[in-house]
Length: 510
Image (tube, one colour):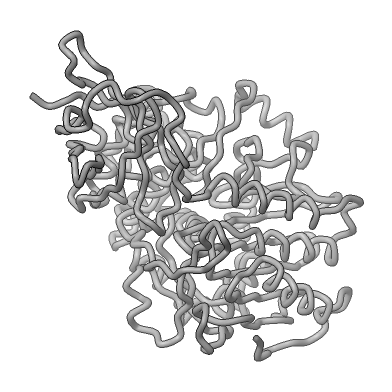
């Protein structure tokens, strides 16, 4: 989950082709890499944990096919003594997406699928908001976020409690904000569709394909594919948020299973080290070819230019050639191609960074969200492995942390920004509905409005902002910004429409 909105000039594939042509603490394994100090990085991580107030993290560092550092830092839960180690289980969130791409790669290697096969030929129930991309979209389009689905749209369908087939059915109701292959739109529902293609072609569930085709050959024995996997381990990192005053609180692990291929994998730093070794080894690990070198190169090749948002931190900027490959993000730093994926779940962060030209990679798993610690560690790693940046990367990252903290503050406004509500609050209560999310119920509870929707009756408060505009808020622990929503009043003084960004426009039920 990576919020942000940016605009840029329309981009066609031919232009993108030209662009690319031009272009605390118990150590488990610590050794010294050939060309940089592991001890220096180790000290930086310890200091970063204190600076950013993160309870714990786990790090794996790979160089020249050797795991030169795999270690836990800090504690699994704030206020307790259990230490993070190399086998502590974390949610890796959107770092699941490269695994979904890799499962598809194994099917490509077997000749059962092509990257440019049309999705609808493999998954006939796949329907996009517009007919042309529905017919033309390929597996590559899904994995490179270029189907025309709007950025982050449809994520709420999972929160509302819809299952995979129903989420897939409802993406046809998402309102397109750009044309097919015009520009990137980071899409979790797109990756759900990709995982469902893999399941259909591989004749097994996405979960079983990940286990048998990736976890087993890579020896990732502590990893899982569901939020339920935490119940099988007694070494689990708890998820943390920070209140505006800095006080930490624990939130339940998010259930990302309905959209699993986009973000439900759980893993450890030790297991993720093997994943990175395979990626840097052209698909080979300990003498076994898990994925073909050709498919690894395909996944690491830019397929769609993207404009960095505030979620892409230094050294990524407007000049770093940021783009999407298949499952991965790609940018360029001091003459080196960097292949990377970040992930964010409620209360957790992950970053996996590969420098293929240096045969080096790093994994950072943190048990707190809205923190830039993983990017701070990654920036230090890049300066040590590739070259100094020639600018203050850590200063830029600290500034980003301050901006994120301000943006995601959960403190309610001190007072309404506008005038009083046009109607008594009870008049806004009712059921509003559309095809995307179904019925949304607005209720008056103890002199305040609340909303809920979906099979899970998911919801939260509606806080008055001014006149007929309210702030739609989420329960604590959910990584989502409030959405200012507006009721439209008819001539008779009755609210008949509810306009939202997150759920579209809903009409009042009779």
